[in-house]
Amino acid sequence: MADEDFKRLSAKAYEISGIVLGDQKKELVYSRISRRIRKLGLKNFSEYCQHLEANHTAEVNEFVNSITTNLTSFFRESHHFEYLAKEIIPHWKKQNKSIPIRIWSSACSTGPEPYSIAITLHKNMMVKQHNIKILATDLDSDVLKKGREGIYPLTEIEQLPKDYLSCFQQNATTGMGMVKPEIKEMIQFNRLNLLGPWPMNAKFDVIFCRNVVIYFNKETQKELFERLADQLNDGGYLFIGHSETLHGMTSRFESKGRTIYKKIR
Ligand SMILES: C[S@@+](CC[C@H](N)C(=O)[O-])C[C@H]1O[C@@H](n2cnc3c(N)ncnc32)[C@H](O)[C@@H]1O
Image 1 (cartoon, protein in one colour):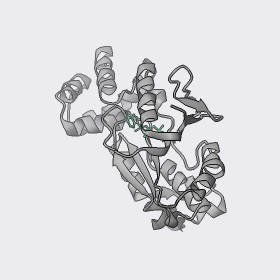
Image 2 (cartoon, protein in one colour):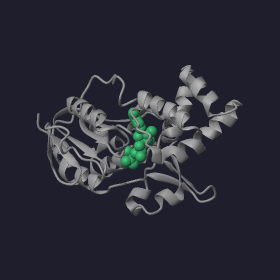
Image 3 (cartoon, protein in one colour):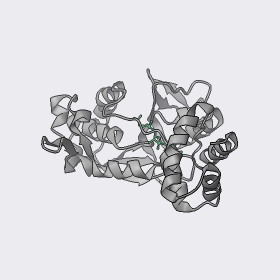
Image 4 (cartoon, protein in one colour):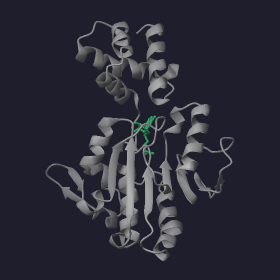
């Protein structure tokens, strides 16, 4: 892959997704795009760039799916779920049951994040008595498919507390665990580019935007945090990833502790 080809691919990635592909990502791009080149029967990276730049919707989609990093796990950064259970849910339990509760997992990857949210709610409040909606979105259509299926290797869930394991139908023969329907039905999975238009009308009480802005530059992060503030109800919460910060980005939140922010204006 010539430097020029890598530059063209990086420019395309940035244009579509905001993802900045630095030089350290060259090898990753090489191996992932080589697969696409073989599959399409193209000769080299330069031909692939031409194909991509012609903006064939299907290939743009495949390209984006190839360059995203989808690492995730159930109850990752568990203090967020503890905060949800101890500080936020008790307040929801006291409020009028007809008031909708809306939560957005905005870069949900294969689903462990929104399912961890749903399990936390299910274990700590009478979810059926409330009007709860969890929206789970991602740019990558492959991960959304996995999220909708809700089937995970038992190795990814067996470390969870026993109480949480009861939210999965476990199959020792296949080595897989399926999220039970009562948890699944709390979540709506949709494709959404954080950099594009957001079709949601209603605002959210909590937004999880974790481990995604690290792939964006500072300008993109600033714009995104402003939009996330606009999309939150007053007093709503934003949870970000362990290596991310709002410091120097926006003044619309107050810190509530480790990577937990409350909207103040
Ligand atoms: C490392 S995963 C984080 C998953 C989960 N939030 C967590 O913390 O475990 C980052 C996710 O961000 C998604 N992503 C990257 N750029 C995006 C964009 N512009 N819009 C929406 N999602 C994006 C990727 O597809 C990937 O699934």
